[in-house]
Structures are given as C-alpha cells and as structure tokens.
Length: 486
Ligand SMILES: *Cc1c(COP(=O)(O)O)cnc(C)c1O
Image (tube, rainbow, N blue to C red; front, side, top):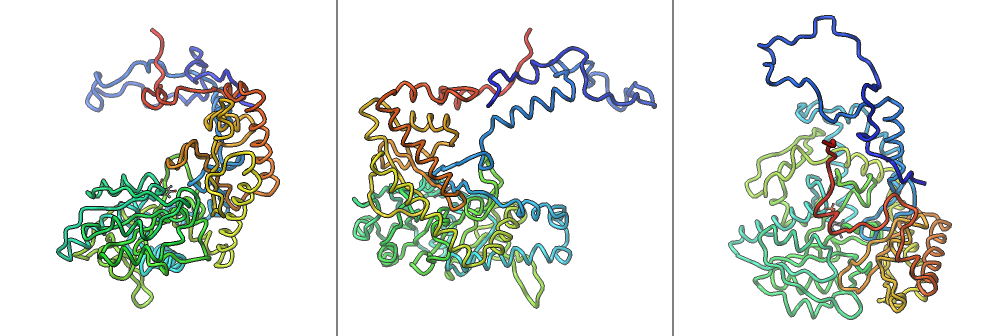
C-alpha cells in the first residue's frame, strides 16, 4: 500500500544534510576568471534538496511502488496489448555488441546488426503477407504517416491528384490525425449494424478522388473486418489504396495474412505485439509493410543484401525520404527479433489464439452482468458498456476507478466513440485463467456495488495516493515544478 504522505524530495531537505562527501579539491578551489568568468558562477543552488543517501533511496522506492505496470498486475487496456515482456529480450537488447554499437560505425563493422534488421523485415513480410517492410518508423502513428505519405507520392507519380482518405468510425484515433497531417481531407464512414464495415457502404463513398481507405483490423470494437476482401475490390476498382492499421496484430498472427486479403499497406506496432515495454511514451517501432507497386516510395535508406554483405541503400529518387535518424529504434527491433525467434511460427499462432480465447471468455462470463453492444465472437478484446449500471447512477468512469481498488488497471474507457460508455477490455495471452477469473469476479462485485452501494463507486479509488483528480485541469495546468517557499 502506498504511503499517502510521501513528500516531495525538496520537502525532506534539512540544511547541511548530505549523502556523499567528495574529497576536497587538491588543486585549489578558485576557478580562474579567464576559464569561467565570475558572473557565470553560482555561489549557492537555491532550493536544492539536502538529503541523505537513505532519504533518496526511500523516496524513490516509495514513488516506484506508486506505479502500476504489467509487472505489478493485470492491465487490460484495450487497443494497447499490455502483455508481459519476457526478460530475456531485455538481456539481449543490452548485449554490449548491440547496445554499444555506434550508429556511425562503418557498415562492414555492423554486419550482425544489419543482418538482424534484414531478417526481421523478412519475418514481418511473412507475418503480414507484404512484399517489403521498412522498420524505420518509430511508432504506430509514424508507420501510418509513412503509409499516407507513400499514398501521396504514388498518386503524384501517376500524375493524379487525389484529396480524400476514407476512415470508418471504428478506426483508431490516430488514423484521421495521420491522414490530415499528410494533407488529405478525411471522409468519415459509419460502420454497419454488426459493428463491421459493409462493402456496399464503402462503395457509396469511394471515388476517383479517394487516395485511400484506412481500416483498423481487427477494429476498435475488437471485431474482425470480415468483408475486407470485397472492400479491397471496391477500393481498387476506383484505383484507391487499402491501408490497414495492424496495431492489433496480436489477434491475427499465424492465422491470416492481411496481404492475402488485398491490403496494400499495413503498419504494425512492435511495441504492442512483439515484446517491448509498452507505455511511458516510447521508444517504439511502427514498421510499415507494402505491396510490390509501392516499394519505390518506401522511406530511405533501405537495407540491401548482396553476396552475403548487408548495406544501406540511400539513393532512390521516388522515396518519401528519411523518417527517423539512422534506421529507427534498433533496440526495439532486437527485442522483436528475439521474440519471434523464440516463439516460432506455431508459437505466434498460439499467442493469437490464446489472446482471442481470453477475450471471448471474459465477454461470455460478463455479458449478463454488463451490457454487450455486439453479441458476436470477438477477437483479442471485447467491448462492454455501463448501460445496466447507469440506472443506479454508476458510470463507466466509476466502474473503472473502482477496479483500481481491487488491484486492476482499468480497461480503455469511452473508446471506441461509437459505443456509449464503452469499456474495452484486452486481456492478452499472457494472463493465467486465475488472474482473468479474479478480474471477472471484481467486475461482478462492482456491478453488485453499483446497485446496492453506488457511493463506493463514486468515491473510488480509495486505496491510492490520490483519488479522483480533475482530469481536464490535470492535463491543462499540470503542476510540474516545485518552487522553494519565499
Ligand atoms: C496503439 C495504436 C496506434 C498508435 O500507435 P503508437 O505507437 O502509439 O503511435 C494506432 N492504431 C491502433 C489500432 C493502435 O492500437
């Protein structure tokens, strides 16, 4: 349990207290005026905390205990794949031959690293069914951006001007932002009654001014876009491209290849699906896979293999250019490579099957207790709502906050936007049946509390350092800096 009164380290300060005492200078204290002029020297550091080593250790240990992560408990945050990351991949990422490799080292001395990049691209081609993959983008959203810039370059090259990108309401929020950033006009499309897209609805909006459609598959309702093949035909009949947001690949690995379904481009999130601590803002990797006809536009440089020698090829006049310094976040690639190697093809398929099974299990066990907007088989995540609890005044936010009291990280809430009061639960394949069962029973208890003692939910969480913060204020006017008094 977190110490509620943990002070700022500045408030622990006692005049004259120190952790370590460096030896006295044996070359004299005064710094010659010609080296650092007096005006630039401080005589004191105002407000600097004066604490002992033990103060520092206790302070930061206490703070670290206030943190919640995959290592501390169940983290069913939908559309995020917060799974356990095998520690062995951390060890591998720290191997000094890789970790200390300078990015400017000549290619002939970095053949091992280049081979790894080359092979990882090949694995991801196999997993997605694409003709080529670039590992350069540093995040899912940057992989999307690479895709949209490629769409732009592709049509410019063909002498066509296309201004629109179609985005269904079940797409991830980064998709419209990306299309907009790449200079396209976003056209919204409503998904069908079953929570997935119908090819005939796509046909109504796609035209020769459409550059692409961006489909998240599985979509943000956790449903598989079954009509993807027909949608691809409709889109291609107008010369447009089908971009698939593949950040939810944890549901598809080894089961189906998006490339076989007519998808022209797909981005993956290595930091969700392929082992890497995900969260905290990075680093990440959002590789982009493309079909043959789009290869010329891929970001430069591209990695090449000739006579068993690996190198980067910079020159490519049609390329959209460089997206990231050097060749992206190498340590993330290393973890993904190790993960794929360790799992193997059948292992990856098992990951997806188990992730899907876990989500469907939760859905089936909770669908009487919580409203289930789409009563169909889901993929790796399921969406429930607060419809039944609302009549007692308990909302999705209250339910999410109460879960914290039971030791669980809340699921993604109020997303997807198409579902009122959505709770999007993604258990992942790495959780045991016991953990999932205890989450289900917490959800059941909370539903009972909602009808019998709604104030418990309204005051939740009650076991944490802070309870409910004004989230708007906390985001807009964050308190980031401590100032000494007086
Ligand atoms: C997480 C996610 C993204 C964005 O990925 P980042 O690495 O955070 O930029 C895009 N699409 C989907 C479906 C996602 O789940």
